[in-house]
Length: 234
Image (cartoon, rainbow, N blue to C red; front, side, top):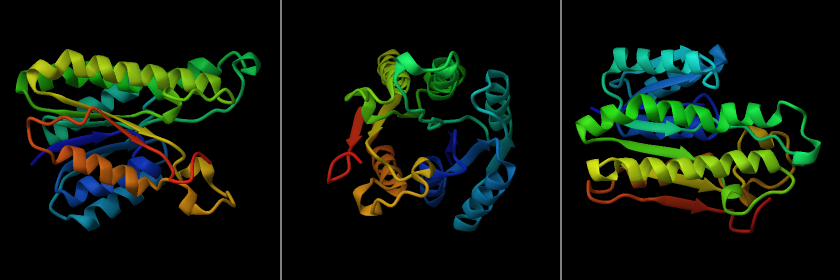
């Protein structure tokens, strides 16, 4: 049985991905700052598949110390992590010229650094085992810069570049690395919107794409999945 670690898994895309992996029979390690959401997600995962192990930790994944403690505890509780989903992210709109002094650093700490740190933590273990699949949840902004969210675009572009480096550094060892590049997706950041949900990608769509890539033969790696709303960006 394989073990997956997912950041930002208590809601939105992360939660949908965790539910999808539970259905596939993977043990799961998830963390969140919100203990109530964490417990609710864990209970839902266990109800979907009573036979899997669920490890939860209340932790701020943007804090390096808490993130690496969570990673170590997940290994201790579940065993070797073979699937890593770097999903943690946040969206802060605004022109770079109007950003406050901490906007970029905050976005880097949430959108980029957890993926960097977890790759450094798990990458060599995956290489030694010659087994692993890393999914990085990027953004269409990495391909189509959003001027109204300049710093966000910069960090998501950096994450996509990091994804490429991960793949090139590990491919000779049989490690798979997949970038997920979604457009407008109906997550908590759109809460309260009056826009019809059918104009969005749904979190379940992202989860379905990840499961499809995960289940491919050992010799096939899906390098990048770009997904946009059928009617265009919201």
